[in-house]
Image (tube, rainbow, N blue to C red; front, side, top):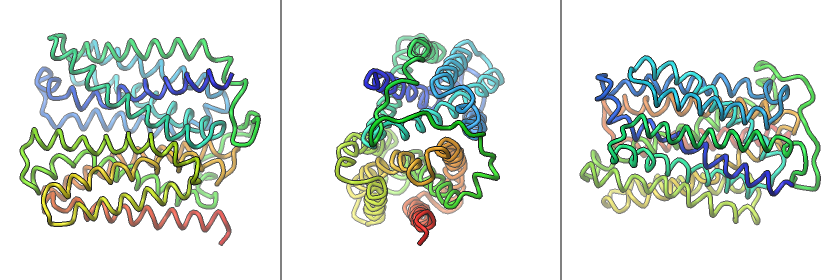
Length: 390
């Protein structure tokens, strides 16, 4: 039974990745049609980000009351409805309004589904599931490109993804009985957890190691998002590549993440989560060193691929290790605040580097990434010492 449910979860992760890259790929066509400045995309993105933070912080309460299956199904339905709203919108304000349910749906399903997998499936599945998310995120722009190149407009691109999300909602609703049956645990059958009352944010922050893992997650997502967002500009401004060439080559970073997560699933058969996190951090460091080396664009491209490969195991391994580090009964609350921290890092740190690049220069990207990595390593190791009582 757990094998059928696992297949549905894999499908869910692909589908959940589909809308995540739509706004960026569609915005060049959207802002002109809407007659707004190109910078206005930040407003929509910020509303979505705030919604994900709010719903992530509520994921413990919602999951304990309704269960993972219902929260996942309802959240995907909310996201699908918001995407359909995007598809019928013809003004910037309408998009801002639909961005509210978009963000609220995305945050709760992310936290709830990740916690379920961390509790009931082995580490390799966490890596492969996030690889599936990467595949979905890579396919989203192709769906939007199909709509735009066919003259159907960006609205139809959003509608196609909305239809796919509606289909996933139907599958999730049908599969609801499976969520409480057979599960693959790390050491035999498992039982439902989370019967206690939800933890408040104050209570969560008093858990030993909670603040450190939140900062570690903040740093990881800040590093990943900043590297992905600024890779193309860095290649243009620091290595003199043309904009179209840099855009294509910058995708190597995402190829590195997706490929790395596929490989990480096999590596978890030999290494535990903490070893995988440290391995990823070491590879990220080597990638940053390649970015710093003054030996041309080839070194920079190698650095981007290595940073992507290094990022691959960190996110799923931190999530998967949460029940082990903080206890199964607290894992949903902990993953909720970790996700909230991640979204804050994603929203805050790339714009901060934008200010630095504007005032000083984009050439500081490797140093910026290095500082974030150093903080991530420090707080993660501090968290490990706290939970082990060293």
